[in-house]
Amino acid sequence: MIPVLIGAAIGAAAAYKFLDKERHDLALQEKTSTRIISEDEVPPDVLEKIKASQRKRSAKKFHC
Image 1 (tube, rainbow, N blue to C red):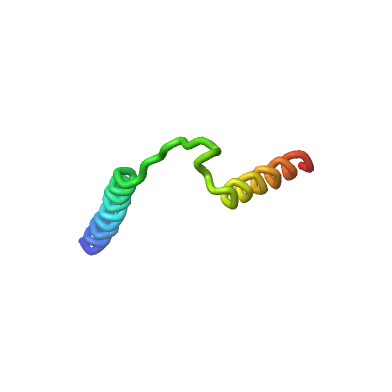
Image 2: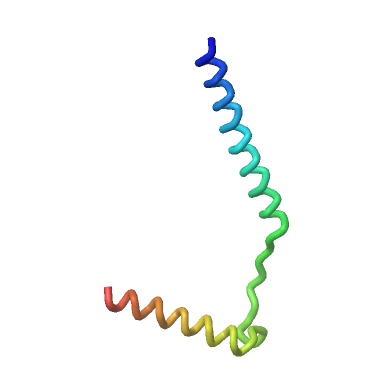
């Protein structure tokens, strides 16, 4: 009887964690939006960081 109760408690805790994460993901999805912008709208310092990051990634791909 005790192992059944322990199993039920563990199952309930796992279900709660899973459902809570799903609810959190839905809420996050509702708050997040994406918009594609042109290069003209991006500040120059941010644009330079993006280009530097792209150069790093392409250098890694070239060396590997």
